Image (tube, rainbow over all chains, first blue to last red; front, side, top):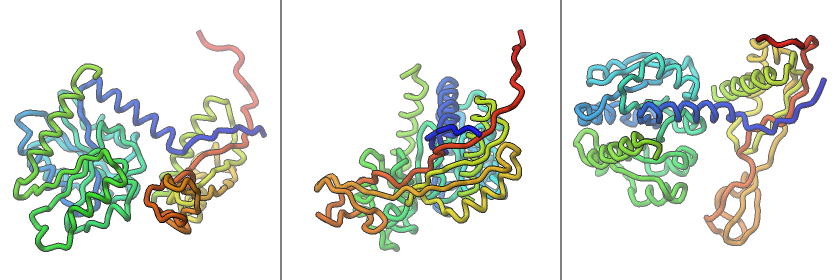
Length: 222
Length: 125
């Protein structure tokens, strides 16, 4: 027996696969958003509204990751975007390899904007790089303003935080200012956008962010 | 669930390593696991024992786990303290400007392995 010293992080091979995927997507001009949140935060509703507003401008697709069922994929197809359902068979997050398989199956030809609707939980999806261009997380008002304290890694690893369901703010003890302070303490660079997909509030800011990022992503080797 | 996926990532890394280094069997794997890495070691061992039967390279491999203590550093008073005991707030000066130095790792430290006996001498082309 010989001893081989590695000193290698277990996620090293995933990080490398993710970077290769990201470079390929950049080459193809496909802006790929990893959307993460808890279950029931309104990811699908937000996506449907976003697709409705942007489908004239961009070719959009959604990779739906769930442990089982395909209800979300069907809703997205009805909303006018291409969609594929990935079943993770009990796994609690998507890694770069699973993401690549899903994207290849779906087909990326001519796509401008692809969302990964990651598994609904705030823990493990934060630990695995999927190869996304940007990480976006959702915190809905009913979940509470203390979530940054409980799931810090998710807030640290996201580029944008969408605070959804702000139309129900009057009914909850949700301190928007305190929540923002807690998030900025963890991640000073994060962009925080409060939205209501139902009433349309804040959607323009979110969609303008997407437009700006898509343009940057498609710019040759920026 | 989380532990199992970490095991599959470890196995994948070992498969690649075996390919590069012409290894036939892995006898042991030493992993360093941070105290606040979120890995539950009992579950991890169960997952390892379940998964290793599926991969001939590691089916006889012994798993050795080493814990890395979690240590936090305070940027204001420049002292280190035990993360698990005190959390994010510095126990000396009560500052919130602290960061984790160690404790979040999951590292494959080393392996023991047997090399393939017959090395192909000549190459194609």
